[in-house]
Length: 294
Length: 183
Image 1 (cartoon, rainbow over the protein chains, first blue to last red):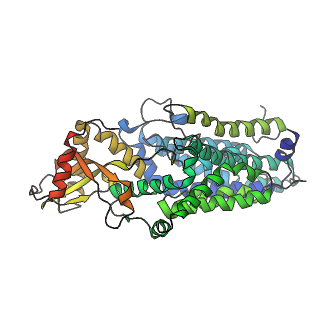
Image 2: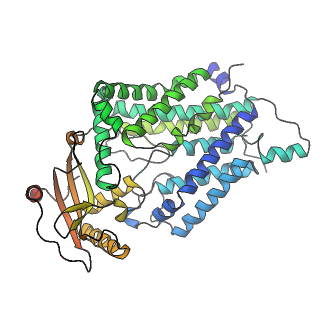
Image 3: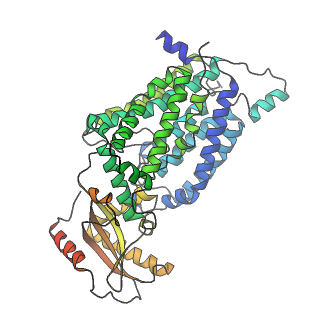
């Protein structure tokens, strides 16, 4: 227990968590701004397709599309303000709540996507933590009034450790889902992964006829070397179940991040499924800046 | 009023971290339930863990040309929200013939209004059964058989001639015995 407490309260520079704040908010703003049309169009879908999840679950019917347009626009504003560190005491938590809402509502239409979970969880930790004590408008204002510059402290370490623990937790749950699923340890043989690639390709062929309908050259390459399915499946499972090891030491965290990024690159190459937050590398920034033992 | 954020106390930090990590791990219990309901952003991540059979059934929309040939239509004409949401929405409508008919009619009107697919004269909402093994073989991805759930002519375009290929007719005859509410 003592070791966990020591690990959790490792001191860190205020700049490290500020960098994570800037890149995470900046990336999310870019990601959501590109999806304005998708979000607002989805919100005006048929009420029959409305299947609320998470915090939207109490809703019995969809909200008027203009309400969603307004909350999404407000979310863009809070993302920009929280990223810049303007009145972060207020904009941080507000931004976390609005991003949680925007993406939950977007996922309340028949299908829950799993690409955006990490970004929402990271913004939640950043929103309530003192992540704008450096590299922010708030810090500039404080400097103007000659308030002391913040020094490295446990106050800036725990948000990084929390973000990393959340990341590791998400991957662990993914890995456990495969182990506790109907296939169990058989998942690691790669046959299921091969079937999943086919399932995804068939769906794309039936729903996106303009896209490339056949297996990608990379899949064809693997198909000629069937043992590679086994390597990819076992590697993915190891990366997911081994995620907690990334918390043990900053170097292990960085090594694991490269492995996890490689797994998403593999998913992109074989299935054309893009985990944008993970592939951008921003999901692993906190591992890159994790506090070292004193 | 006491300042709540940012959290600057050790107790507050511990509560936030324990709450977030606990919330992320809590959906693990869903993996042991019979029919777990997925959520966001706290999920049990069921993707890629379901067992796959030899065949896959996908509901989709397709156009019929005047000569009876077939063209698969983009699912964005029939639903919205991204490919997988569209897939679920089309599948839900294909389960009931009345809803499938309404979807086919809507897609037909949309095609007419936008003036796209000028060679297509009718729209069908179908459920296709695809072989997973066939995906890795050379050649286009084609269903082993299809069940036409609904059909709607595109207003103002000529009727299709009944010149569908013999294998397609055969495949479509075979699925007539499939019950209406497949999973």
